[in-house]
Length: 197
Image 1 (cartoon, rainbow, N blue to C red):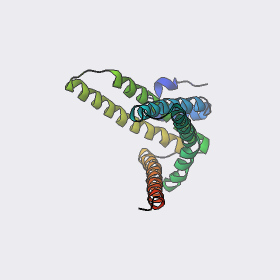
Image 2: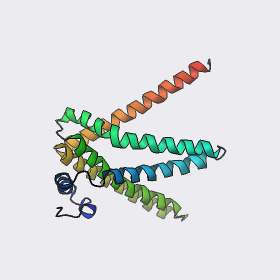
Image 3: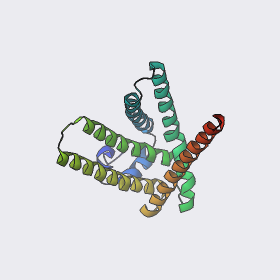
Image 4: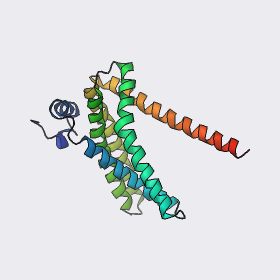
């Protein structure tokens, strides 16, 4: 039985909370947190897509929504934990895949809070430069806090120091960014060749 409240304590005692979660019930809430993050993230992407591409048909928008939901879920639930485990070997990470997936789920929970906060903040329309600056500072501070917090969560899940966990997380994100950049570059070259330019 958990002696802590993970929803409260994960903010201020991330390592102890993650250890308690992993020791007691690492599978609880994993699907819920990941699906919630995927839905909120996809809704924001879809709203941005509709605003930027209002001329597209409803079927195209639904197709975009489904592709966004499915690809993001597959990435967060399957690929990203495997990537963290793989890059973690560079730093002597000892976490099991289920432990890392639990970490990803709880970091998704924290990221969902950030998404909701920034999304709701966009609806507060105050044409005051001071308010806009304060809002941006709060968001930046919250992002920094989440990076530190997520690093500590990963450190516990992987059995690493915080610095090694930061290296593990940075390596995994770098691989993702490089893969996206490579895919975009290859796609642009294929389009260029196909168009005969």
